[in-house]
Picture 1 (cartoon, rainbow, N blue to C red):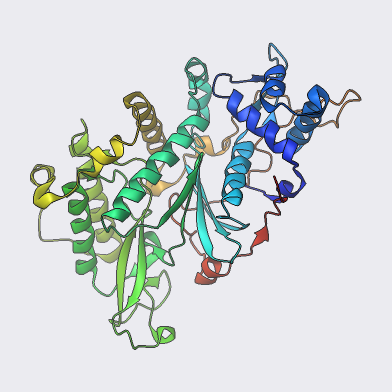
Picture 2 (cartoon, helix red, strand yellow):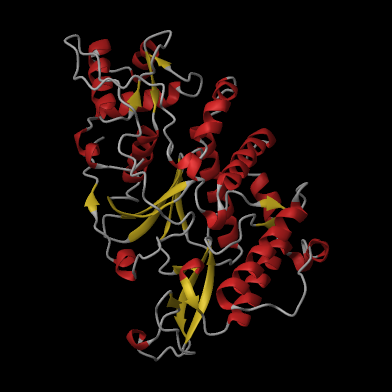
Length: 437
């Protein structure tokens, strides 16, 4: 699904209260009974006013009613969760406008947003389950038996965990985007003006960059962490002129496919992104994850830059001995102490592993699942009629126009073929949040 914020300008304070009531009720109900929505929202107009708001919310796909439900009720859609997150950021004065969607992955959407002063930021929206339609259908009964057990819940958990890791890494001086805020299944972070490694055709010093990335893997290990998805999709290359007096306009860029290679006047610095799948060096499968991260770097450099290191390894057994050395803070323990239960982390790890296994070669989506791109609401009432005379809302799917058929990079901050102007001058459109809502 695509995030369309235009309807936000039409929502009233009562609509937001009803939408929030559906979210609260969703903690214990897959389908929130209408009387419970009325009870939680406590609008002055009573049941009639609540039903009017329900109608408005259903028309724009923020809530939905399931087919053959045993009682009158509604469920929160991903669109509704998106709006609640945006509303929170708007209330914090952190987001004023929404611009281009610059990345659509199998597990998340990446958008450019801006604050009231025009400062551009990145909004990452986690959408676990997008490429697991068949598994979602098979697991739906299982998920319904668990309180809060849904892809929406797991997406929220992924965002919370990624934000916690991002903050911990930033505090230790790792080059990651600045974590600005987190709400529900979304993260607000600084915009990094950089290219994903997978878009780079050549670099001035492949051996130097390779050594820097291996050193980064080992530095993470020293702090007790394994990235778990350390590949060309999740590494950005930031350009920094070696000569500070040089004209930035004349500095050559790292060469994207089909472009001229850079000169030695530019240093490329790796910036790491995407952290919800991070695991501890003490994890039961830590050696497998560590070796996989190392192998990803080796394989990419051999294929893209025709560079093969003469040094074997690094090896997990050696990295394990460095954990906590020289007073390095155990970030795995710090994040685990942030309040994540073992059961929740187990569920999240299983979901992320499922997403990774569903990817085809080179991170592409399995064609078998592409035809059903995140259509998890197949069994909802999809009647397109307008409101009935009694004021009952339209029963509308939450996904609507989801842009299926487009092909994007999985994790990158920018799509293949997107130029620098797309990052720095997005087409910004106001959220138009009403005062007092």
